[in-house]
View 1: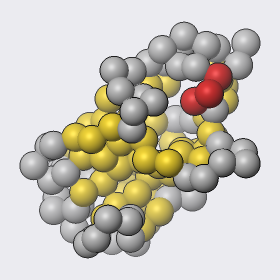
View 2 (view 1 turned 90 degrees about the vertical axis):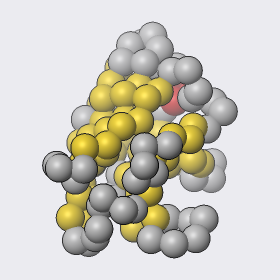
View 3 (view 1 turned 120 degrees about the vertical axis):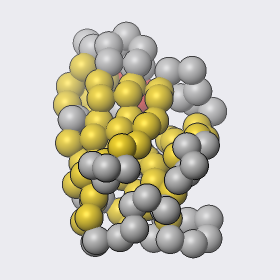
Length: 116
């Protein structure tokens, strides 16, 4: 199983970034996939998930600013992040769920830093 994130970096407040996660080794079409993040000194928190049918869920802190999407043909999940704030600074992890309420698979993470 592999989940490989890309697209992180440094952006100014109010800016945008788009994260991508290329996956392999599990049944992407049927799995729920998504993103978590972890800021220094804080616990990992849910950012967004998208189910196989396309239903989405967002953490309260990103609703209205972030958009999650998936491309089943490419086995890739995306996270469009708009109106970024300094508190969005974190390592962002791509995840996949096999069963249950906690992800079964995690990527290595990509750093997003929002700063002027």
